[in-house]
Length: 155
Image (cartoon, rainbow, N blue to C red; front, side, top):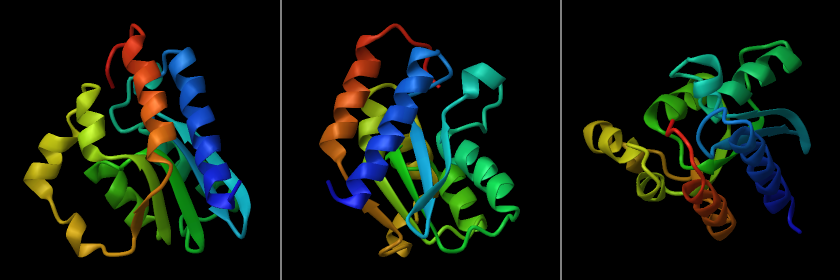
């Protein structure tokens, strides 16, 4: 298994933990620096009653604590769903070098999330060539299917 696929599998596992515990949507994230996992996170919106506690933000907060800095230069982020604009901007503010995502904004919409509406308003992803790369979409789609078949409150 390639390293990238290994990290995406960890993000999927992190998302499943959140789903099982009814923390939020099927969005798990792993942050890697120098080939080592420095943080994991998943959507905890329902757990925390915090609309900003998406998987990427949760992992960025943890990485800052672990590394003792807000500057995550040199880090790569792996996430099960293409980041919403809030998370995309959080990654940029944190100086994340690269984002790997599984499911697309459109896939997020299929399972009931409204990322596509915000994407239509804000757009701009085409201005970030090479910053985001799709990875393991089929494995992440399977995760989304599992989530959709369960009884969950979307967020």
